[in-house]
Amino acid sequence: MRSRNWSRDELLACFNLYCRIPFGKLHKGNPEIIEAANALHRTPSAVAMKLVNFASFDPAQRRRNVKGLVNVSRQDRALWEEFEGDPNSIAERSEEAFNRIIMPGATLEEEMPTPPQGPTEKLLERPMRLVQSFFRRAVLASYGYRCCFCKLDVIALLNASHIVPWNASVELRADPRNGLCLCALHDRAFDRGLVGVDESNRVVISERLSRKALVPLHRVAFSELEGIRIDLPARFQPLQSCLEHHRRWVFK
Image 1 (cartoon, rainbow, N blue to C red):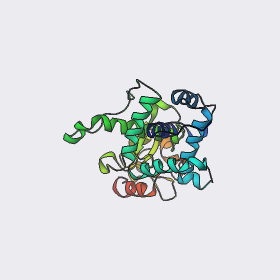
Image 2: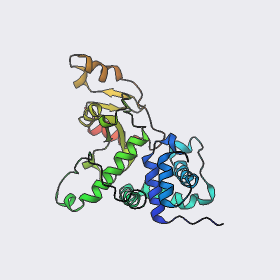
Image 3: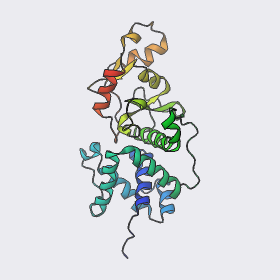
Image 4: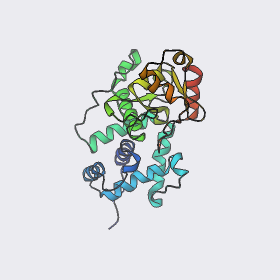
């Protein structure tokens, strides 16, 4: 029997699922994939292969020669290229497709911060919250729900930190490559320019922190991390152009 073609909304929902699941769990035995397969009326193997197809387009995985299913990859590649060209649009549409098809009745996460407010933002509040929800899920899942600075893995204490700030670039708001998974302390320090990441993906500490008294928390959270290479994700690795922007305009 000839397999049923994937609809646009099904592709969007699967792309969203791909961004939600840690990279090492893209297999047919994953309960999340089984649940999605039931909602899509497809086999877990078919859904898992679709996720692997998306993985094969990520530059980090292309370097590892990850290959998807060649005979359907053209359709998947087109969606991936759309995402690279306009991540905000695909983030919004994929969140909507996922919520409608795979998790009917789902609501936006309560812990999502309220988007920056202004005349334009108020009109676009729901799309912006969809974008924020997508960004948070994609970044945290890509880093395996662990702070890439200190390795803390308590989800309640983790944030998806924008490298180029939200207000500095509309185009990068939904792009997971403009994100780092950081614990609450390192997120605040990164946002305030007290810590950064150099060209070799190593932690750098601002002189404003170096001059402070070394209380135990200061020593463990900052001094001992200086020069340590951050944990890079298996997908959506941070763009060097974004890190350079942070070093130039935020880090002090």
